[in-house]
Image (tube, rainbow, N blue to C red):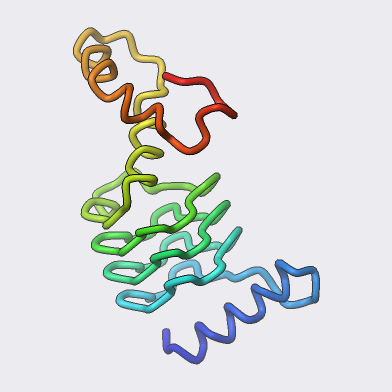
Length: 143
C-alpha cells in the first residue's frame, strides 16, 4: 500500500476517533511491510492479516487493534501501546522488536494462565519478578 493511501486512511481514522466523522481504519490484509507507521494512532484499527513485517510501529497506538493473523516478523514496536490488542500466536510474530514494557506485558500474560505442570510452575517462579513489573499490575493481580 502506498504512503499516500496510508496517510488518507490514518486521517479518516483520526476523525473517527475524535467523533468527527471519518471511519475506522480497516487495513486487514494490507501489505504494510516496511511501512513507516511510527507514532500512528491505530487504536481500534483492523489490522487482521496485514503484512507488517519490518514495519516501523514505534510509538504507535495499537490499543484495542485487531492484530490477528498479522505478520509482525521483524516489526519495530518499541514504545507502542498494545493494551487490549490481540497478539498473534504463530510464527509470524517471532522476531518482533519490543521494549521492556511490552516484553513484561507478554511475559505476564503468558504466565497468567492456570497450568499446574511442575516445569511450568518452576519457570513461572523464575520470571515472576520481571512479569510483575507489567504496567497494568495494580489494576490486575500480581502473578
